[in-house]
Amino acid sequence: MPRVSKKNLFALAALAVVAAAGYWGYGHYRLNHADLKLYGSIDMRTVDLAFEESARLESMLFEEGAQIKAGDLIAKLDESRHRIARDQAAAQVNVAKAELDLLLAGTRAEEIDVARARLKAAEANLVLSERTCKRYQDMGKASSALVRDQACYAARADRAAKEEAKRTLEMLLAGTRAEEIDVARAAWVQSQTRLADAERALRNCSLYAPSDGVIRARLKEPGDMVGANTPVYEVALMNPLWARVYIDEINLGKISMGQNVELTVDSFPDKVFEASVGFISTVAEFTPKTVQTESLRTNLVYEVRLTVNDPEGLLRLGMPVSARLLSK
Image (cartoon, rainbow, N blue to C red; front, side, top):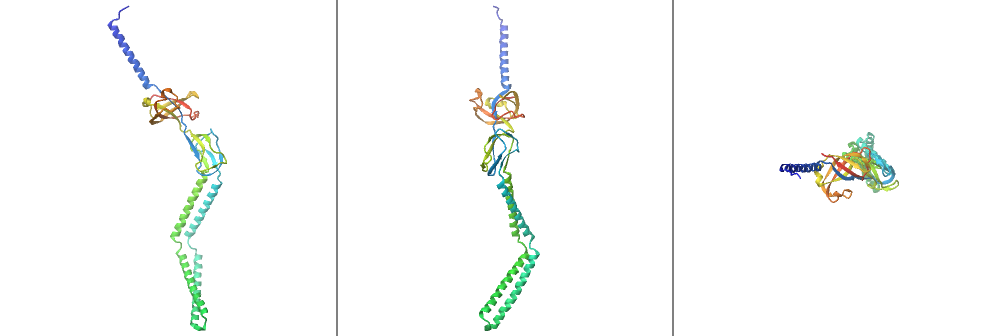
């Protein structure tokens, strides 16, 4: 067996050290630069849609599983009661406006002429009744006490009638008080507010989709009486589409907001969906049961939400996903 020289032995040892260092360096590089794989599911964000008014449900326009777009009419209430209330409120606005216009127009000249004529008639009646009273008083015992009293009471009544006619004419000449106009104007504004509320209630008899989504549950049927805020649909929102995944604390430094992600699902194994990091939780939690990787089941993890690009609408809510976090 040939003897190995010290020089060769030293060279072999140095080579072994270099190889070990290279292997450790390569492993460390792979650990820090390899793409990270995360697990989770398509996020299920739902909203309960309800009317703001109470009435009988007239129609439900979509079935469960149907896709809807923002602004789609999805249900209607019976509008008859709310339409009557709207028409009544509109009539009250017209009445209040007419009363205000009447006060603003002031007294007509014909009314003032009538008041003047009534005052002149009252003055004439007063002159006659006062003279009659004085005549009976001057007659003394030649006239009966009853006749004298009747004549003098008639004079006092005519005097009061004359004062009433005078005050009426003065009021007509002075015109409408500013306070009365203010009250009438406030009543008109109040009637307009009631009309606006009635029109709002009538509009709310139609229920529209607030966003793109999928009908998950149809909770009521036509003919049902529904109260205000009673849900009639449960809708899963699809815009934006989220995937909820989890990352452990060790790898938390490898992820950042806006980072690109490739998403795959079992239903379409050959298709890759583009996504990006949209949210990273600041609070750790135990790994949810929906994450089915053995190495992560008992670890503390952080929730990450990915904004997913799914132009073909292939992904479904709750679908398990695997996310490959691309290197920064």
